[in-house]
Structures are given as structure tokens and as C-alpha cells.
Image 1 (tube, rainbow, N blue to C red):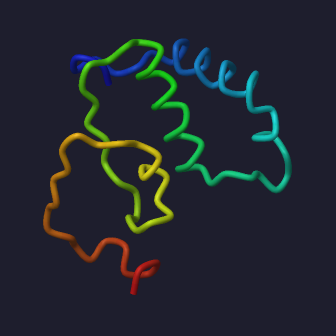
Image 2 (cartoon, rainbow, N blue to C red):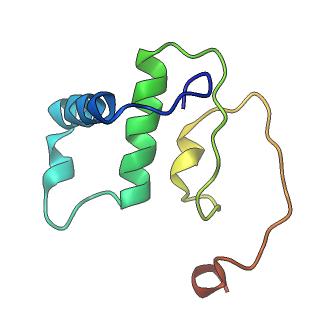
Length: 90
């Protein structure tokens, strides 16, 4: 979302194609990125193209290999963790 407005389907499609233009390896099988990693890449590309001043990025499963660690946050908030990812995290 930008300013509370969800990205349109056409803009999302455009951003995906832009990312694939400079990263065609993303279409390899098996894919070099997870669904979350590719989605994070597209979101960060969109934010950069729209020149956002502040972006709120929610982590995935967390940890040092989480795709959101590609960012350089000015502020980080830690919230309580729930049990929704116990199958993956233990």
C-alpha cells in the first residue's frame, strides 16, 4: 500500500515485469527465490520507484535469512510473537 491505497493489479503486474527485466533468473526452475523473497523484492522496487519517504516492512518468518533483512531500517519495532508459525520455527 501507498498512503493507505492498495497497489492496483496493473501496477503490480508492471512492477513484476520490471523486476523480471533486470532479474530474468527469477523465472528459472526451481526458482532461486521463495515466493516471499520475490514478493519482498517487488515491493521494495515499487517503494523505490514511488520514492516513498517511510516504508513499514513486516518481517516474514524472521531470522537472519529473512528477505526483509535486505533493508536498512531507521527504526525497528519488536512485537509479541504468536504460535502461527510453529510448524516452521519450532
